[in-house]
Image 1 (cartoon, helix red, strand yellow):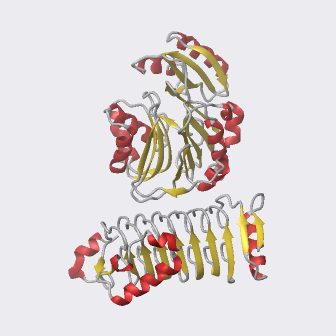
Image 2 (image 1 turned 120 degrees about the vertical axis):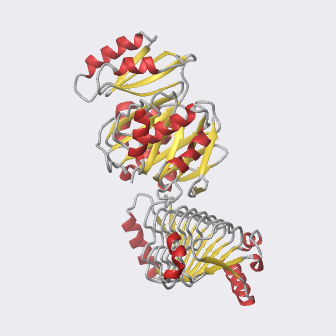
Image 3 (image 1 turned 90 degrees about the vertical axis):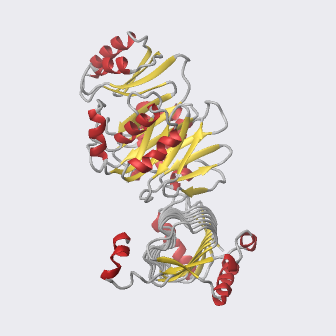
Length: 301
Length: 235
């Protein structure tokens, strides 16, 4: 099961209640995935700064962890620190290479994880229902242009904060994905990436989608070409939404195993596993269509 | 005309209300369907049901005689295993529409997603737009009409279903072959198109005579070890 959603505003620069839209869509799909919920939202932040969301750990020493991470983040010009649940959010000075920042922050503990970094992207996740996600992070207050969300029914890996979606393309600023399905050549691909030194944070096969797309984008492909290469190189079932600071799009596997439909008007693009999410969140007269097998669609921001 | 407001009611309550009304020979309109699943499933009497919006999965499935009109789009498994009656969708339909249909007519004005009419056992399926991957797979009887383009692996491993495609057929499934349209086919096809498509929509579709007919090549009907190559490729 699992439910995935995406919303892209075509009219305004950055001022839509994208958080509220995503939350309502997720609530309508909550029965498809009671284990966890999460969103990746694209807003605007001060120029020449990146925004980070850091998971402080799985234990009960989060206050101490927050202090340690804050101290280290200040070395990178970190400011505007705020904590919600197990997450610490802050902005820091833009860098070309994120590696030193990531290794420094994640050196605090094996369960400390930089969940997202981006000029526009912020990811938050919570174990349990979309309602719990809202309670912890006030997602509905988020103003932005577009975003994607996920509600999870775990099938093959544990239920915890790290295994929840969306996944960040770890190390690649502003790339987020949500995936419904099962990548059957996951172990094979993971070995290849691990030999190249890529660290995996979970046992969740969906994480490989983010790793894969980050790899393709680093090679210079645009999002559309990267999503197209999923059809050739990933096996199994996938209905997948991905977004960067430049584009927003989806891909469906060659067998159309998993549902995914979308509606597009002059005002918005909305994508969801089931139409009930669209009708529950977006009033008005518009039509929706199920995506076809191998279909890739991308909208530029 | 009876109005049923679906908002705030469980699907069971909505379906019970529909059954009661058509049992009394009243035409029914379901307001605010909200794309919910299992609406109008297993309606076992003739009756008119109009759904003022989109429906979720399995709408009209297992029904026997009802006439259902959906003014929005439909999710997966539309009219699955329907025995008789009519289901008409103004928008598009999700995957597995009219799967294992036994009788009656399913009309989709827009596109159909993957696995349209798989294991079709009778009846007529008419799509105004395009159909997706693997339509007609292992279809046994009945008629499958697609006014637009056919998707990948069209009519794979079929038995005796007849398919008609108004647009492109670029990728036939295993053992699917193009056949000549005979005059009787053209007459029957034109009659079906004229009966089930609204006139304005009918005008935008190809002439019956320009449709391509796709049937089973019958090579998979009986196993023949000399034809092992086709069996290797069959799904």
